[in-house]
Image (cartoon, rainbow, N blue to C red; front, top):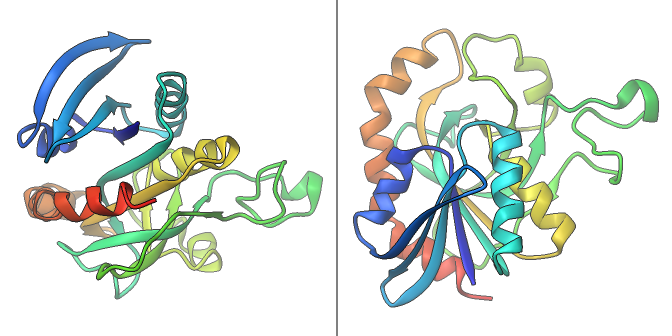
Length: 218
């Protein structure tokens, strides 16, 4: 079964508005939808914002029978390839605010059970540009995270994706992540987010078929 995990209701509605909703429930405090999109059955879990929420939603998906994960949503751009309104497929994800370097001597972002800060994402050949995603539990406004994000070569930042990738890695199931850019890193991130959110959501909506084709091509 394909499980779709999104953080916010407005992101969920992008897909739900084009789907047949078979039933809706509250499971472990999270909205849980069983649906069909283009005759493809899937469940959608509304995780809530942040890495803990995202990890919990992914575990819920696994215990509900998911054998593949799709995450999509809006995110902040960090490099020239991540322009507002563009959609990137994530090839690697990292938790940039996770740091065991003082204990393990490993690079920032490296989990205790890993030797690299990156989780590799599943990907077929398609027309989406690829990028590296950095996830952390704060909205990016200003430049205080610039050094570590540049060290990690991140193109995109959000607050959920790498936690989803982390759980999928541990469960050894394929995970696809797509991010639509709503704002650029810097002092104007909050203003740009509000101004461009609808542009980013429309970009997601316009690519739903491509997302599902990718997620189901395993």
